[in-house]
Length: 103
Image (cartoon, rainbow, N blue to C red; front, side):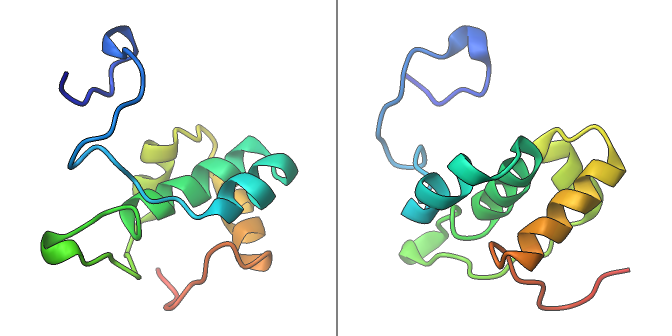
């Protein structure tokens, strides 16, 4: 069965090359029980585009450049102010680190 992002075609989880995203245990143990959904979605989006992406030869990204708009679209956070607050909380609690200030 091929990977799908469409709910009507989802038939359970399965493992196969290209179908896995590495997620740190702390995401489930610390973040999910304690944080609002907007923070969980933002951190999850950043994980998916950084360490969750495996390049050729098994290397994983440690850094990723994402725009507000990209995070907002991927995480499906409708309000820019909610997105800004979620990013601010994630930074303050050190779930994510900003290496370079954007514009």
